[in-house]
Length: 358
Ligand code: PMP
Image (tube, rainbow, N blue to C red; front, side, top):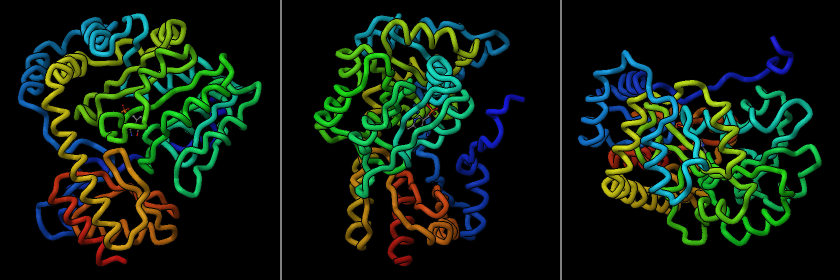
């Protein structure tokens, strides 16, 4: 085994839906249990999407279209970009791993904020490159000045997670532009926009617009969150030609199933309906964040489908209390909890729990 693999932590995902339901249901003494631990979309699949997937399931004895041709064409139309600037992958985390593989190896540095998406350190270490973690500000937002200061001649890639997982905080247009002006042209900046559709702050730039103006910027998007396809694993990057071509080279062959491809196409076609659901989740987000503040909690301004509560050494205790009440949330030991905005009943249980925990 490669020495780089020594000490790489394995992923610790939130509980599976089934284990969460069993644990929380049993704890609450009833069948109702809610999983608010993985930033999933609580709505069930749209009937139109489910029908498409069911029809496609009839031919899973065949390999999928390796090039994702139809999906790539749909995405090119939807975003107004050439097909040659697109690459799909096994979730956006798969595409992020390819981006590192394509750019960074031993001796190279990858910069990102910390705390941020837990995959960044893992995929960086797998490649043999070195993570350079730049702490969030006390207000839990990216410190872009410090991130620019951290660039060296070994820097190959920078992740900007916007909104940031797990804090939900955002980077706004003016500060992003100022930052990008300081990044050398041979360093790739990845705008990870997994939660893009939940943003309501008009000052947050659309990464696709930023990519159009800057050859060293690429955008990561996913069908897992707003589009509700987490279980089907499909994400994509919009990037300029050399980067997109490198992504297509480093892709796992047949890494996006035919079911996932067809579900993604059907979801793009049902986008209005899906974005309507996102609107309801955004209203719930406002209700939860305001409810928490009324209770006296400090809640960073979130533009994603989750809220972040810093609890320090009470984190594990709080997660246990939530589970007893019937909601499974995501603890980051010693730091805080990330709680996905779910069904309104689930959000109600969460708010009741926070009220009694204070
Ligand atoms: N980026 C961020 C910031 C995320 O939070 C996640 C999911 N937790 C992903 C990427 C990956 O999502 P997926 O692989 O399902 O597209």
